[in-house]
Length: 255
Image (cartoon, rainbow, N blue to C red; front, side, top):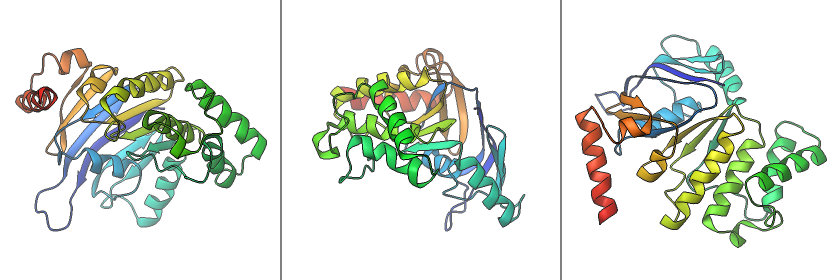
């Protein structure tokens, strides 16, 4: 259930400088990690590369033993096969939840296992119910997305991702669309998932969320500049870019 990213290099058309400049990190199985950095630092690009939504020229991404290599190091056929295999081990929770509005919470979490993995409907439904109840939504199984709060929709989206039994679960700014009062709810949800042993990676600008995880990586100009426990990285940062980032976030919170 480990995620290992080694020497990732990614160029975007029209930009002479690479967006990712040899980015590397390794996350042990079952950890809850926050990836931090200013806008444009490369966090979202890295996330899309891990999911196989963007290609990269050099480096490798190892998802629990399945390795996707850069375009300069593998053929298109090799990459296609590796990306397909890695996606079976990955889940992604979007910023805006992307729930089907015409389906209940339970049906949103049942659909993909039935359609994609050909799971028996009753088995998939029972698993979806178990996940939703485990995330505190036992009273909202038959509610439609428009009947749910933002925090509840986020939990349904997480349950839907978990229904596909990923080994690594990625989150793209999970609190960005939520009111401040709901952000603590999201952190508690992530900790519930953490107890299940799934490796979780959270791209976030939310300092309070980052303080509540187990591990933090700070990305700047397409590379990891600092990593470690949040109490070390966020309270006693070594790198000047980390200190500048934290100062910006604290100023925004005061404003």
